[in-house]
Length: 65
Image 1 (cartoon, rainbow, N blue to C red):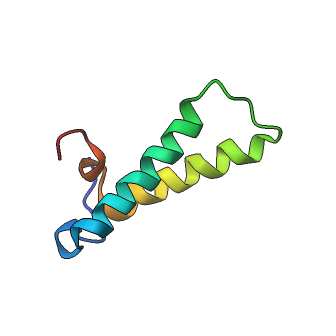
Image 2 (spheres, rainbow, N blue to C red):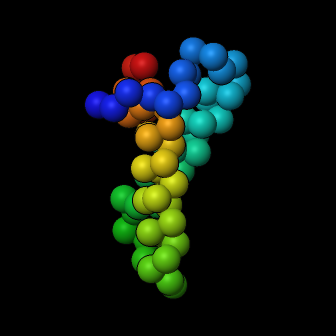
Image 3 (tube, rainbow, N blue to C red):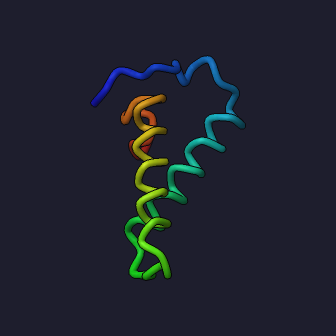
């Protein structure tokens, strides 16, 4: 677990849900059986997910949080 750079408690519920949805979307692309035409798409999603976890802390994206 990492310490968040942005405190999620300062965000509105709509903002928190939008961030979680973006993270879920990235993870779905990374973990899917879908083979993108270009490798870069999956790599971009991996970087986006990692950046969100770095900014908001990995605990923010755990189930039930």
